[in-house]
Length: 354
Image 1 (cartoon, rainbow, N blue to C red):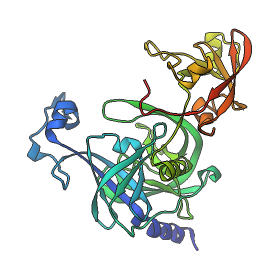
Image 2 (cartoon, one colour):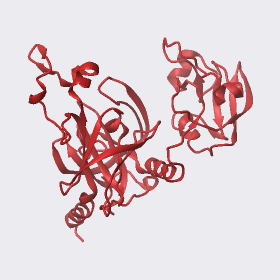
Image 3 (spheres, rainbow, N blue to C red):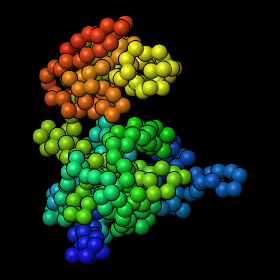
């Protein structure tokens, strides 16, 4: 099969499972909490929110305040998307399929660490996209990005290659300016526009290898996707436990680079320096956390966890995710120039972490 025919075939087989997600809220609730969402720049000033009847509405009568994309992974109505697309617990979510069928959707899980979330619609016999293995992807591999570009152009497709692996970025997660550090991302030059977020990044076997997640504004041909294996883990957790479980340590830290080591005059060449963030009053070690009970202190340098070296490529969270919940693991630290070995409990992350 010729390359062009291959692409057309993949699109025809996978597009029916790609959905558009519409986000709606009550007008009064928006004015009370997020009036800036309704404001628009005009010349040298910002216009006030327009009357309610002049704004776009969802089928349920709410004000449309955003949107994104997703894709169906289970014929009974389970949909994968980005957490930042469905981050608002007070919003209404409407899913539109490629065949223009609309369903109200509810959020069933949000990953506390990765930009992954799951929706469910009440439907049966829906088309699905098979999930691939993001651990086997290679630089230069051809990919397709699908979704609702700019929140308006449903069933959009762009093509490109994988142009980078294991990227680390800080991305804005909501309209209030909150951000999240995303690790291990796939970089692609396939066009990923606002509205594409949550849509699938697909290989030429018709398998999802990533979830389109972020773009770099002001740059061209630089987009990022969450590796699908992170979502596969979440799907397994949801099926077995009814929620997404994540291990929790309870420390704030700074990864040691050559620059950090020189500037802070540290003895260790690698690791994670246990340190509170900036001028915040939040402690470096959260009270009553596994780290606190194991005796970790501010100023300690975490060198190894579970016999795995901590460095810029292997952050604390990356190693922690691979450790079985419910047991303990060894941790090597450097304290006042002396290496020590601690034993830390691998516990489930609480719903809210201060």
